[in-house]
Image (cartoon, rainbow, N blue to C red):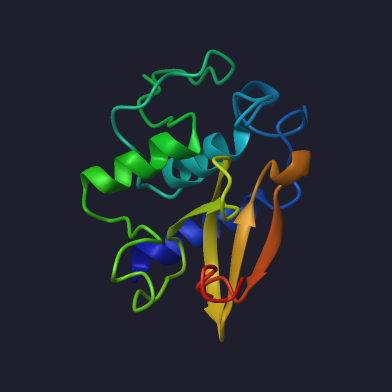
Amino acid sequence: MKKGYDILKAAIRELGHHDNDPNFGPNGRYYAGPYNWCAEMVSWVYKQSGYPFTGGSFSQKVQVENDDGEWMQRTSDRIMRWFETYKQFVHRDNKGWYEYQPKAGDFALIGRYGSDRLHAGIIESEIGHCLHTIEGNNSGRKVMRFQYPYYKINDEENG
């Protein structure tokens, strides 16, 4: 439980920040942007909370002394594969999808039904049928809170 709350606290500290904000982060930058910085924000949050990803790629824009950069997973798909490797990801088409209860600090892979575009976020909570997340670069926006009502509705059955 502590791990999830540590991750969530780190995500909350990011609210309002943007990849191009010169006042924040190492050398004035949080993430490597300008593209896919949603995944880079998630990577940064996991690193800042003490639970960094391993085997990532170093971002040249993020220059932190004595940091080899292995914490950086630069795309949503790479983060998903990282969690799959550790058997910590539940796919939407998995039988366990509807039974899984998201927890604070979990990684959220966000996409639209029928689209191959993926987006990364961090789960803040699930209340009723609504998923609450913290995300960066959602349509180019700064790090903000988002809600996904009825996110577990079966799209095939409900048109």
